[in-house]
Image 1 (cartoon, rainbow, N blue to C red):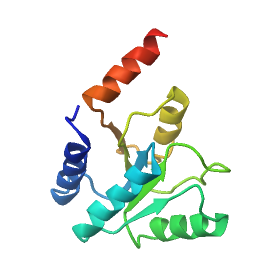
Image 2: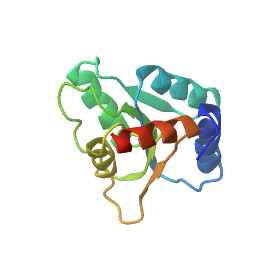
Image 3: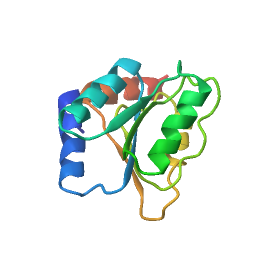
Image 4: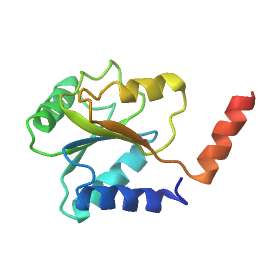
Length: 140
């Protein structure tokens, strides 16, 4: 549980800088603006990060994923939904961060399915407002 989005960014930064999260990191967001804010935040600290946007051409998506998989950068930011076709499976993803709570259980389950390694994990961040929203959805 984090107070706000700034705290979430700070937590990811600390986890990476202290090497508590090693290897490839895949971050899921619900909104394209948040994805680019994260990218600029990481780039400010010389941490290479790229965004997979649904409006990108298939060749661009394939290219970004290829460079991610061969280790040109280790932080990839993607949206929980909106892609015209499913993303190809990622190789050797160590950690997945759901920066915002997913809107459906199916989205949550899909995000976790990207981890191939046994020692990998999924980290979920939520703010009090997101927790309240999820509580309201569960009561409907």
